Image (cartoon, rainbow, N blue to C red; front, side):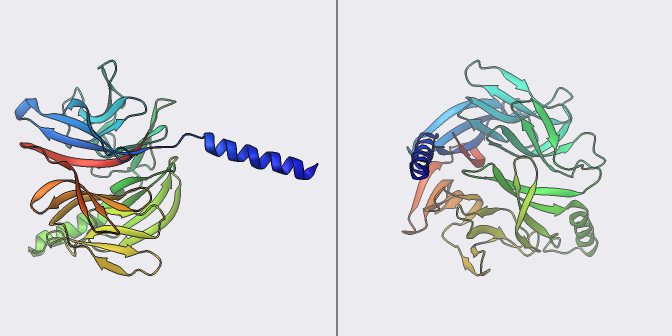
Length: 325
């Protein structure tokens, strides 16, 4: 009887796994164009499975920095937009079906990161109510309960987000954090000494979080500039950019996390950001290759470079993020 029950549960678990929905990864890409009061952000989806590029919609570009994320599953675009005061940015949502926009927050000042994990919109944002609005904690907007919250109090802690990225296939993310106070002190010192190379960087630390704001583990730390950091799906290696000071040239390298060994990466003239694609067969890059800026895929085995989206004429690809539908 016990063997029969065990066999039954094995069959049941297999059926549940096979019936669970498979998430399909895609890139959400922000492109800005226009002049004066006519600036627009155009949002594209690049499906990594079908290899198709689709224009998903447009929203006004009114914020300090244009951030967007198209949520294909919900058929909406989340974006940053200036509020009625004209002095601060809020999280907004544009419904692709009804063509209507809605403002989801009221007390933010600026937003520097934006993506969706399951039922949470993840942000790095500063608060109007903070003593210093340069401090940007991680934050989230709960799509079920329509509630926004900071993950730590910017009036009690000066920890600031340099970057944040989702971990595909999970409800987790990783973020590069630093002390704004340390960064500001280093900048003042560089200005006083008139250092041509710029300020000494603060200590940057990359932590993993769950989508409730709980810190899971530390992945990496450095006293060099850390413009971006990408963690592989198997969490065995990273790809990142670094510079010794603010104005010194950037370098790009792979890092084996177990051994700390580094391998330089030189095919691209410039890289703004990067993600490992799910499965770690390729690297997804926003950068310049052979004098052409765009979104690329770099095959980690064959070293082949494939252009996924060329930057349009008289437009600029501001950013991209990895999402799932």
